[in-house]
Each structure stands twice: as C-alpha cells, then as structure tokens.
Image 1 (cartoon, one colour):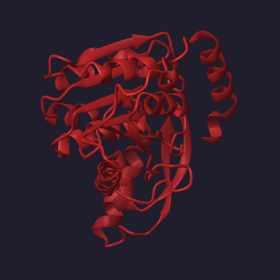
Image 2 (cartoon, one colour):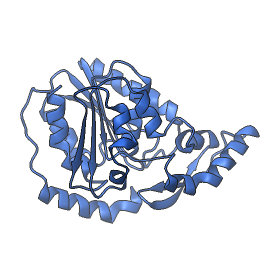
Image 3 (cartoon, rainbow, N blue to C red):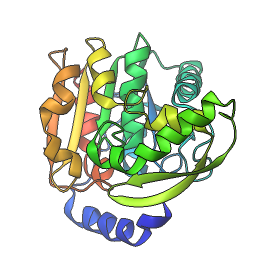
Image 4 (tube, rainbow, N blue to C red):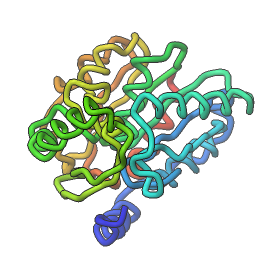
Length: 263
C-alpha cells in the first residue's frame, strides 16, 4: 500500500533478520486448501509471500484472491459481495483437490476471514493475522462519523451507487478513497456487517488462531475484544509475537503451518 512503502521495507528487513526459517517439511498439509485474504490496499499474496511458500511446501493448496479492498479495486464491492468472492476461491481450492478448507487473513483480510466464518459452514479452521479495520472502534468511528451520515443520506435519496470520495484510516494513517455510499456503508458502518466482535460471536465452534504483534495497535484491545467470543473450540489459540502489523504474516508463518498440522 502506497502510504506504508518505506515502513514496509524496513519492517520486512527486520523480520527477515530476526525470524527463524520456516520448516520445509512436505506432505503434512496434503488435502488442506488454504485461502489467503490480503489486507487493505494490498494485493494477492501481499505481506504473505513467506507464509504462502511455507504452506505450499507443507502440501497445502493455496488460493489468493484479489479482494474488493485491494490497491487496484479499493472499494468496488460490498462486504457481503466480498464473501461471495471468497466462496469462489474456496471452490477453486476444492476443484484442485482440497478436502478441508482454512481461511487465513491479514489485517482487513483477517476481519473478512472472521466475517466469512460467521456466515459459512464447513470450514476446518480460521486464522486471523494482525486483525485490522475496526468500524466500531473509536478511532475509525471518529474518522468516518460524518461520512457515514452522508452515505446514509445519499442512499435514502436513491444515490447509493454514485461513486465519490470518502475518508478511510489504516493503522492510524488517514487517507481518502473512492466508493459508492452502498459499499462504504457496508465496510464502515459500526452497526453494519464488518465489526469483528459481532462476527466473532457468530462463528461456529471451529479451530481459530489469532496472532498479534506486540507493536500492533490491536494488541492493546486484548483477548476479550474478539478472540474469546470466537474461541469455542479447544484447539483455538491466541498467540502474541514480537512483531508489528505488517510483518506478522511473515513472522508467524511457522506458527500458522504448525498449528494447521496439529488439527
């Protein structure tokens, strides 16, 4: 994502130097299909290259769809429409031979992974890496309050599909995005479909892994923010690492692979 380019390079260099190499065993995840959901402003595989490689080396079938919050698309479809796009990625993994499906997301992708699990049955596992995009949290609410009121007003006037500029926020950095009121409301309304705690509470009792870095703002929300609401399976796990928001997928790659192997 353009606002984070220098910081991204620096943090990834730190992760490369500090993180242990991923284990390259093969065959342990044969039959697993893993759908990787990128973060806001990213692209398929962005920030998750090391994780994707580790999963493939372990035998998993990996699908990395481009989602409505990618750098190229931001925001061209609603939250619910994104769920349908994830359906297609899951189906592609099944076509390729996957028998068990895990959804793994980073940042807004982690939000979507939880949202997907709240809406779909039959998943083997969900992994949330440095979850982000919190419409119900004070920082995003403060940034978007006026825009949400405007979006609702435009929808009431029959202008819900008129694309215009709206405010957004990513890891404390404010910027503007283009979206229709319908799409914007679906992503940012604190009473809409995207809040993590609401979706976490609706998740079935499937294994759930939450990984957060100590330098990530969401770390200070703690386990009770959403993890405990979703941790209904005895194999669910909350992991804290010495990492930052952007480096978590790379630093946690071995943790994710080994946890999936244990299921």
